[in-house]
Image (cartoon, rainbow, N blue to C red; front, side, top):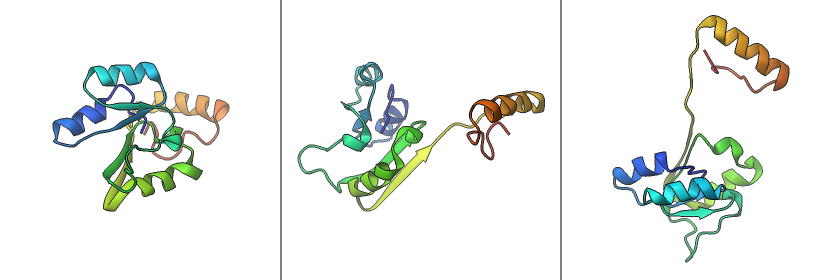
Length: 123
């Protein structure tokens, strides 16, 4: 979900996986399609796979996008889409900054978005 321009999807395809992208932004979906990624446009929470695909996926993954999914719906939706023994993977990049930059960024986050910084961000 949140396949964006398809960077993770293309890596999975290159490794031999069959991929279905779900992306809310039509412009990003168009880029992914241009790279050969089939994409459904809309919210992951609203996506209904065609042809009775419930419980048929070996992997539901999200690179850099799971935080956009409604947790009250998204986790259940992901579980419903997985075959028995299937896996869910959500991952993000983590940057590391020099201590003075980290302190400055943290001050801004603490002021404008309390609680977002979290453990490990920027460290």
